Length: 435
Image (cartoon, rainbow, N blue to C red; front, top):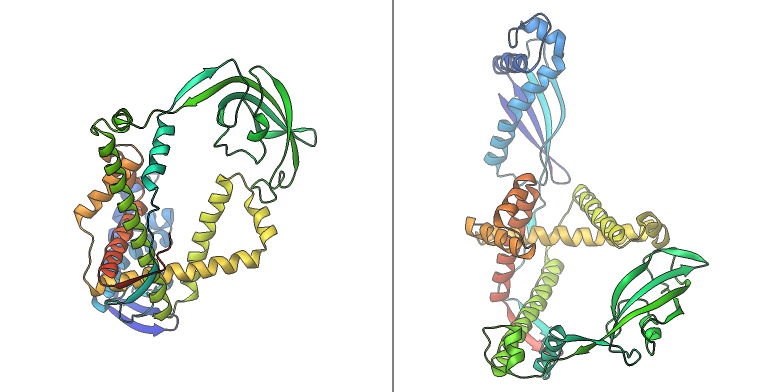
């Protein structure tokens, strides 16, 4: 068997593979026995059909495919390992030909990752706007906690205020037609923190329990539903009940409500300060990492082939379409409005950035001999279990169904290790001290 390697343009390699008849015939006979066990040939017991009968029954092409499936993976693996090829995708078979004696010629192509010409990535001079917590961060967080642990008091002797919660029935109409998904009964709305259309919650102030009335609002011009963008709407409203939010006092009891292990208000404030300080540290690390990667992207020369870019664009388009659909929009209508070329150009720019960043991370990981350990993966699995509030066993089961999850974990771990290394070795200068 011989494998001749021919380097092509666009980071591709052509493999001319020749396999002698003694090897291919042996594999062909093995394929016949294998298929004979899997198919029922009329007139023969399972696995007992002669080769010539089996060839007529299943077709020579099917047997030859079995030969290819048996031989080529090992040949590809050995060739890739011996030549230290770093592949983007699995090898593709361009053509194959079986001679009369069953000797075999195969032409395959390998797409290699582009060469990454890295500059100096350690000791980088980085200047960023430092994030600092505002002086009143503790007071603001305590107010958030007060609202979280507030009690709701039923109100029967007054009208609604802009800080109340109201239980309402509502139904919306545009041009006399009921809005799909625009009605509900027994909906609890916080008038101080409404995410409804501007003007909706404000018109529910100064109303009484049991009162029925109409309000008029206008959907934003940038609303996600094309049919409702910029449209005037009318809503029928009924106030079922009014509740007042009673905030707890700022004392030791509030601290214990937040966390039973916190025995005093001072302990709560110290806990909030630790959280805020850690949040500021993480934000400055995020800013530092962003600036580092922006600098590396500018100074690193990578000749990325169009095939890689096109695949990444398709992946980005798929993600974008899923987001649009989840938000209730119409992907095709959005493309039409934004312009196919504009969206494509934006996706291409993002695709190139993603690919370059991934290649830079991979190159640094290779240079620094950074690897993914079993402990790293176990940590990621535990993290996913916490996020999705499920068991580790359930996450493992999902990984077994979809190995792309494991691949994503590996990428995350390597990216995190490379990012940590870059930050630790950067000379960071803070400017302006902006929040």
